[in-house]
Amino acid sequence: MKLPSLQGADDLLVKIWSVIDGRLLATLRGASAEITDIAVNTENTLLAAGSIDKILRVWCLQTTAPVSHCTFI
Image (cartoon, rainbow, N blue to C red; front, side, top):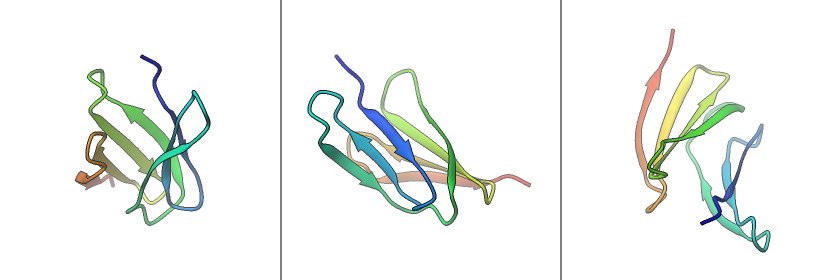
């Protein structure tokens, strides 16, 4: 199974793209500043995105629903 391509940038969105046909599969919203880092857990069920405002947000990849967030000082 091919994993999707992930994109986060200064538009405050995390976008999930199909690597097979280039289609946009999902857009994850909720960031309040430019996204600098993205990671997926080993089970490919959760996506975490960190932004320059020091907030880490986590989404469920199956439902694209937000799961959690935390702020780092």
